[in-house]
Image 1 (cartoon, rainbow, N blue to C red):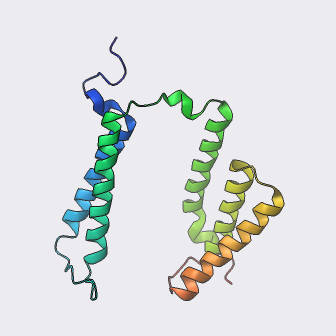
Image 2: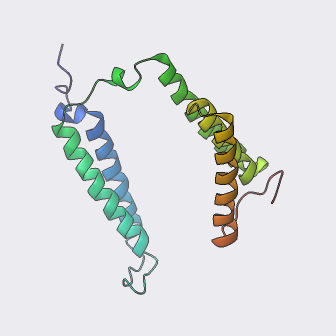
Image 3: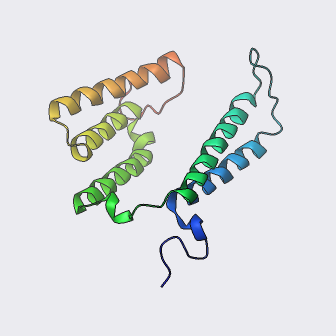
Amino acid sequence: MSRRGKGPLGRLGHPDALSGLALLAVAAFALLSARGLPFGTLHQPGAGFFPKNLAVLVGVLAATLLVRGAVVPAPSVRGLWPERNGLRRFALMLASLVGYVCILEPVGYVLTTAGLFVVLLRWVGRQTWAATSIVAVLAAGGSYLLFARWLLVSLPVGLWAP
């Protein structure tokens, strides 16, 4: 049997290298998609200023991850979750994020965001109820004020609108 990293992909069998390659493809796609947008200048940015700069930044970071993943030996995947609790908490976090996306429109931004923070802080992060409650209320309310009131982003109203 072949040793880890010596398969058909050679050193690219490492997770970091594969992630870097995938992110490099995303950056290239974003850069190609934004090619028709005007770049502008630093003092008067055009519509393509942000997406093109972001694509280049992601590309540089992805290339760095690709090189690092090809050079540094990959750790064992077993080390990520030394116990079943880690895998269980990861599954709960993933399920809560999927649930957040599914109920955001009907329930509304403020209640859904507060609920997400409760799940993530209390059951995934194992925080006390006091800390969980304070952070959930401040995060949901503060982000609502930032996005809806200050930046004028239209957020889902749902069941309860402040």
